[in-house]
Each structure stands twice: as C-alpha cells, then as structure tokens.
Image 1 (cartoon, helix red, strand yellow):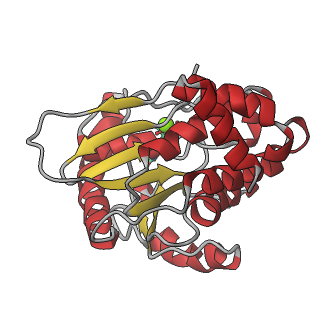
Image 2 (cartoon, protein in one colour):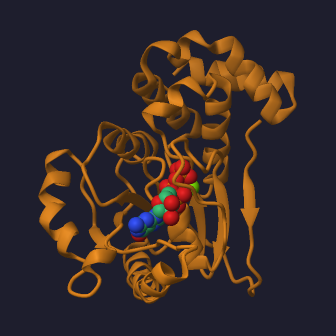
Length: 268
Ligand SMILES: Nc1nc2c(ncn2[C@@H]2O[C@H](COP(=O)(O)OP(=O)(O)OP(=O)(O)O)[C@@H](O)[C@H]2O)c(=O)[nH]1
Ligand SMILES: [Mg+2]
C-alpha cells in the first residue's frame, strides 16, 4: 500500500512554502541530493530495484521538496496498476497549491529512454511546460578539483536534441560512503555541491507556486503516459473505470464522490 510520508526538520514556520518536485529515473541520486540539502538520512540504494517507492515531502527553509519514485523499465513487473495510480493521485493531491520548480536528477552517463520518459511525464504531461526546470547531474565528483560543470557543458546539446530543455544544468556530487577513506574525499565535494545546488534552486524557482491544470485532466494524461511507457500490461484510463472508481473510493472514502471523480476523469 502506497503511503505519502512527510518530514519536517525542526525550524520556524514562515508562510506558504514553494513546492519543488524532484524527479528522474530510479537510482540517479534524487534522495541523496535531498539528504544533502536538508541534512537528512533517508534511505538511498544502489540496488537493482528502485529505493523510493512513494513520494516523500520534506519541508526545508522556504521550500517543500517532494522526492518522487522514479520510473524505470525494471518496475514494469513489480508495480500494480492500482498502486501506481494511487501514487500519482497522492502526488497530485500534495501539489494542489501548485509547483515552483521541477528538478530533474540524472547521474552522469548515457541518456536512456526512461530518462526521457520521466521528463515527459513531469514536464509535458503534469505541468505542460509551465514550471521552470532545473537539471542536476550527480556523479561529477571526478571533476570536482577542476570544473564540475565539465560534463553538463559537454552534454547539454544532447539533452536538447532529445527534447529535454532546462533553465540550467548543474554538475554536483551527493555521494556518501561508508568507507572512511572514500568519505574523506566525498565530504568536501558534497559541501561545495550543496551550495551550488541550493543557489541554483533559489535562483530558478518561480517567485510563487504556479498552479497545475485541472487535476483530473493531469491525472489522465500522466496515467496514459505511464501506460504507454510500460506497454502491454496496463490499460489506458478509459478502460479501467471500475478500478479507478474503487481507487477514488479508497482515497475519498465516499462512494458518491468516487463515482463522480471516476466519471469526471473518464469523460475527459
Ligand atoms: N558516485 C556517486 N554516487 C551517487 C551520487 N549521488 C548518489 N549516488 C549513489 O547512487 C545510488 C542511488 O542513489 P539514490 O539517492 O537512492 O537514488 P534515487 O534517485 O533516490 O533512486 P530511487 O529512490 O530508486 O528513485 C546510491 O548508492 C547513492 O550513494 C553521486 O553524486 N556520485
Ligand atoms: Mg530515492
């Protein structure tokens, strides 16, 4: 069962926070980046299967970061349609007051089909290009002594050619090592990275949250994109109205509302 976790490190509350959605394929360093920025120790993993299964909210300074579960091809046999849809609905519910920044996280290396699929899902289907997008490239530690922008600069054109446009692409390192010898190398690079990433987030976030289009329309578009990505075993929205209704019943606890919501989505 999907759960939506919230973390609030001790700090004074002040006004509405800017929602910053952190997304990208599984295993690219999304949670590691948020641990670095917010001083947390959320679970990260280099295992073959994804680590963050549900989106997690982290309140930090003027921001509300949302760590999302990355889509990978390997997930196709492990996630059920209902669990995936529930995740999307919960994510959208948590973004009801809009989004100020999208942060795409990609580990230095070859651009893969699911990187583009994650980009399309969040940029084109969820927000329709209305929100600024920052790209963070993790794994730039080897360039830390000279220029952590080396790989981003050399590869920006490849992202653009794939239809992935960003306000800025920032090279960084979020790696923590349990080996003290390696950790002595990573720790100062992380300190530098934290500053670079925070400056980029502050510099590119919209002045306030930008509202998303109508939730049910976004949900339908995201779901159909998701089905297209996973191919054969999921069905586009229009064919799953019954389970959709059940799903909305779980979320709202109100059968009348559930039927109306399912109908609203189906009728689009
Ligand atoms: N070398 C290197 N490894 C990194 C860096 N950032 C993260 N990692 C490692 O990459 C692995 C995956 O990191 P996570 O933060 O769990 O990735 P994620 O994007 O949250 O993955 P999911 O939750 O599965 O979507 C971990 O082993 C991290 O230690 C980096 O800058 N350099
Ligand atoms: Mg994660």
